[in-house]
Length: 180
Image (cartoon, rainbow, N blue to C red; front, top):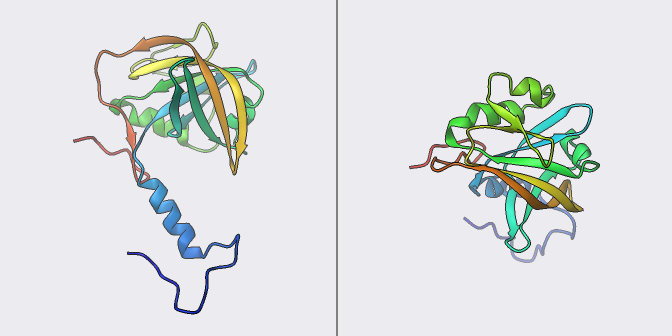
């Protein structure tokens, strides 16, 4: 249903958004299904990881990807100074892993990966959990503040693995639904 302004009332003042529109905007954006990734960074003191659903390929040649992080988050702060990181595209069976890395105030990535097979990336030094659909090691080429997010564009340095099969972990309407 489309909301309409009453005749003669005009448009809302520029720069203002009615409260119901803010809520509807959130609902609309949550209606976009997306894959789920883990972004991992080794910053010299600790290993940092976070669940990211705002990830996309940008270019085939050169191979570039984009990661979007909440600008005032600790992972964004770390990626603001670290030049290399790893991205793991999660499989449907990794829902619990995605949930662990999405919790605020979480401990370091090494603690979060206890009991989960993983390796340290040779190019990035970041932790890369096994069992995903694929993993990439990347180097930052550009950082851009966009509203309340930090967009990180990075070149793909290496591909540590690509699974031969498997279903992706999907985020839709704030949940991780099964495909099918």
